[in-house]
Amino acid sequence: MTHDRSLPTSWTVTIVRDDADVWAVRKVVRAACDKAGASLATTEALVTATSEITRNIIIHASYGEVLVGVADSPWGRSVVVRGCDQGPGIADTEVALRDGYSTTGSLGLGLPGARGLADEFELVSELGVGTTVTLWKHITTERKA
Ligand SMILES: Nc1ncnc2c1ncn2[C@@H]1O[C@H](COP(=O)(O)OP(=O)(O)OP(=O)(O)O)[C@@H](O)[C@H]1O
Ligand SMILES: [Mg+2]
Picture 1 (tube, helix red, strand yellow):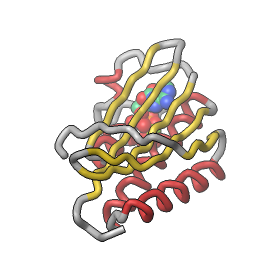
Picture 2 (cartoon, protein in one colour):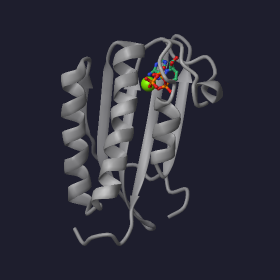
Picture 3 (cartoon, protein in one colour):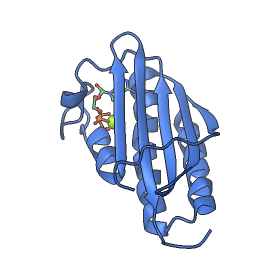
């Protein structure tokens, strides 16, 4: 289970460009968590983390897409959320993950917060190419689906 970064075989894709889309993505994540048998606490953690990476796409990259799916692996089941954009990219991902780092004068807590709420976290970004953030939340024996 530890470091399990299995990926779903299929995704639900949501195009995101404004606040209404944040709500749409939250709904998709809740449905995936429900299907996977996640507890309320697990669901809320992933919904919150998803909101942050979705807002980042809208604010820093204008638009992009958020993929949501359930992965099954020999270690268990996970709900996986992946945000992708072809925005400006991040020069230094390590710096961007520090508490309080923001290029827009905001709190700078979105990325570190999302990382803290996920079981596994991956941030891949290239300047001028775009950014992909992936969150995994493992479903333990919380509830039978
Ligand atoms: N999808 C993205 N594309 C380009 N840059 C990004 C993206 N996501 C994050 N960043 C960069 O990483 C920085 C840190 O992101 P983080 O979400 O932690 O803070 P923030 O969005 O500035 O503030 P907030 O606390 O309101 O989320 C951002 O200021 C921005 O420079
Ligand atoms: Mg943010």
